[in-house]
Length: 211
Image (cartoon, rainbow, N blue to C red; front, side, top):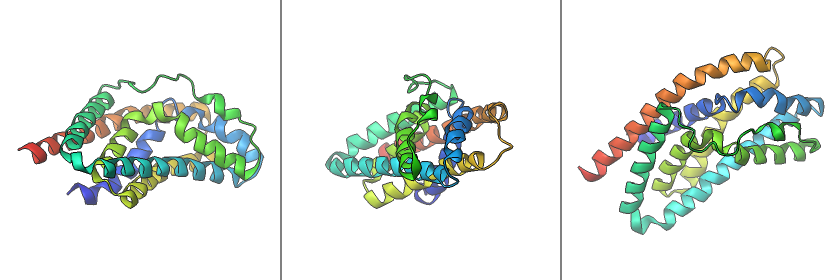
């Protein structure tokens, strides 16, 4: 049931993540310097970001496969984690937001496409506190599957949902920081919808695995 729905959910999760109030408003600052250094540099940043998330999917899948002998305990952990993530999204609890302001990387002076790639990879890690609840839910489902290829694919799809809005901002002169702050307000209702979906998946796993 969820295996067919999960790719769509992963893409939606990426879109919800980028609408986070601590990510969306600083995207123009991230790309302002980059576009001056070449029209393909934003693509390099997004590619680095996608590579960062995909690596997380591979690593998580490997860990999940390693603990397949303890699948029962892994399922219980996943159920608790998914329900917790759902509650955190519904009530907007920033349980992962411990690093404060992430705009310090916006003015990175790394040059060229390689610099953009490295910047994107770094952002994938530095922005983890902003997307922790949503991304953590995706990684939890990936870990339970224990399939490396599946994990890489799902996190790549997640990164597409994350990257496409970023590219629209990067290559559109109509998006200013003030406008994006207004758009980011829609992230709150979307996070609540995602929270109910994630919590529902958690309770469904409890029902399927124990009842």
